[in-house]
Length: 175
Image 1: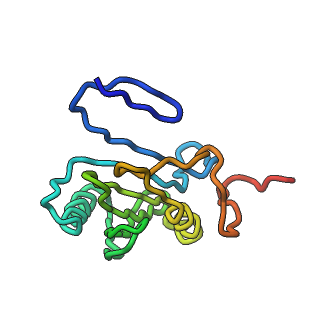
Image 2 (image 1 turned 120 degrees about the vertical axis):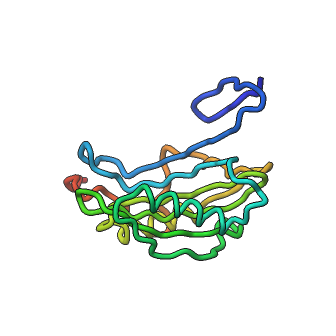
């Protein structure tokens, strides 16, 4: 059995099982049932490496378009992400409370395809975008092909002079 070690947990996994790690952070404090602005980094081994990254990205968009109400593809473009070639896809869809915007960035690292996803309510996406960009700009890779975990992920730095991203439904805190 292979050993999986993480900052918070460690366990054994049967040989041959695929690592489909998901790392996610969100803005705290939304009322129940409301979407928090969030970022997610996910590792996947499901893409055949013979399928070009841009083709795989469009396959993902096709799947999303058929599943999400009033799906709108805003843009798809080649970008550099963490020093690697990547495909960025920006899209929105409708929800009863106004809609959601997501920006997914797909890239290869080693034998794995990774997806960095930034999500916010449509009305809040532009305000959250500088925070999403700052988080993405701090991505570092460990030896062996996987993005590394931040040294202290429970207390990420706002960095870059950005004010903290707060929940618009949360009353301002007094200092």
